[in-house]
Length: 116
Image (tube, rainbow, N blue to C red; front, side, top):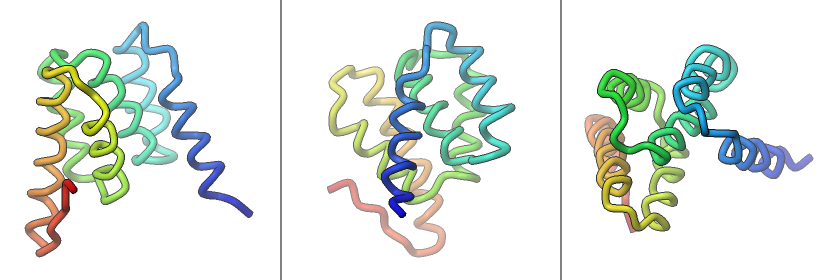
């Protein structure tokens, strides 16, 4: 079995969603996907934020809150991979904040996340 390959296909699918209605996609991730996988919901939310980095404060706060409580090393690596490939300054600033949230969370349990 190649579960990791199938999981990558699901991540790729999440990245290819129709993000033209960001609020609907965000709500879908928050209300439907989250109940099955917080990690996939966060991936969708992160992609919403990438598409619109100057989004409504309450939506960004919600994403940051979920990122703090549900984010993990895999999500950190996912954000970092996006951070290394994107050139838009607004998006980079946003992703940097997301990375800092997880770095702070993990530092409390003496785990240093590396950006290398």
